[in-house]
Amino acid sequence: MQSLILEAGDEKREARKTARALRDGIGGRIGKSAEIVRAISRMRVFAEAETVFAYKAFGSEADLSGIPGRIVLPRVLPGGAMEFAAGAEKFRRGAFGILEPDGGEVVPPAPDDVVLVPGLAFDVSGGRLGYGGGYYDRYFADRRGAVLVGVCFAEQIVGRVPADAGDVRMDWLVTEKGETVCGCY
Image 1 (tube, one colour):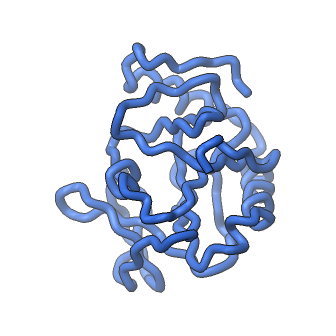
Image 2 (cartoon, rainbow, N blue to C red):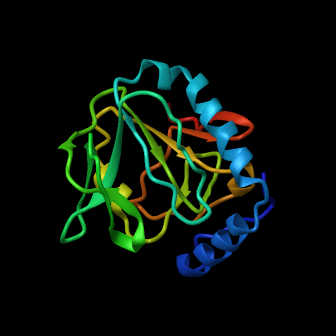
């Protein structure tokens, strides 16, 4: 765990800048991403999930290519809402330039589905520092029983991330070193 503590009193914008620079500087991301995929595949909650809510890697995020199972991916709608779609054959650049499904069947989360959540930094109590759009926080404010798994490189786990009342917490964290329960699952 990094000794870095991203204080709630710090501006989230500065915390994001610091966390992005930390993640961008992580070496061996391709190999570590493959280890993360293997670690996810070994998780009990993953094995029990009917659907896996994943993401297309953007920038220096962990690449989840090769995750097995029924995969659905997020897209941002006009007005800032988010939904997940399965079966899209084409992708387009959406919010922040991230690849999103262009078409496909809209799939809502069901109890025990697994949601693999990207972020800039996480802490072991389930706190997540995202990119600032609030898409995951709004979409999963009512979890609907879905299991939220923060996906990151080990170097992205910090002492504490700034959190607001509307920030959703992760149930698990998974890195190239394995999984961690966040105490709320």
